[in-house]
Length: 372
Image (cartoon, rainbow, N blue to C red; front, side):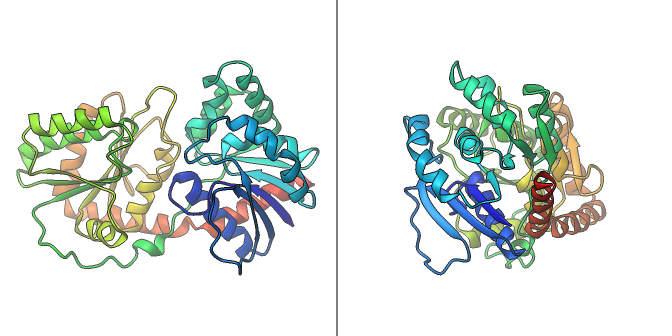
């Protein structure tokens, strides 16, 4: 089978990019020919690739100005480059109109990662109509059941299938020994200081946890520049609650430091909070923490529910009652070592089963069903 893919840059610096790269490599590994259209500003360093890569698209990380006009400019070349493909698949929702115009009568698939399931509702006319038309043309491969639910709310007649995200479990299988002495029971979170990541809710929960576990520590990994006003609010609460020696905003860290942080941690907590039209499409960081054998805590009404088996690999708390439910959940996993260890072991098994090969096999089965 020859698969034509419209993808983000294959550099794994964002969610779109990581997914695009991993899926392309997995499809090649299971024996299929792949031609990938990527942003024209992507640097291609390796000439000895097992797939064809064509840099002709406008970028989405970040989204370029006059984006739709640039999509239209790319149409003739994109159509020519993918004319021999059996299936067209866009791994980025923003490329949906171009993918629909390229596909013609061929099977057409779009990965829906989360918030962009609502994109047709968020844009004004005529852009909203363009994306509604394109989305209706697609079979939506949703990364979680919650994302599928939202897609169905936006377009009730949408054709959908859930194909959950995967994780590179081997990356977290052999964590390095910590270079610094452990200061106390440690909570870790990742994904940056953002409203949708529930950083403020976590900081306030840690203040309550400290009443029971005075030596608790909390490490926050990821960007501190995406939402400056929100970061100011988080830093203000850290100071107001006297958590300067407890909560540590580490920003982006090198891979070695990230893995050391997982090695020193006792529980992973990311209380995702729906923020307007944006929501957590899948709990990839929760699954990565499970790969590191950590018990995990997340929230309901999000794709996180697919990444955590509640009561088995971790705990799910309510978004609406997060202030009441999150602190005792953290205390429970920090004080019950047997439960935490059992959940961590179950989580590692779950993560090890969530391979990109399995994703590719499910995707190929979807392509084949559409070709039939």
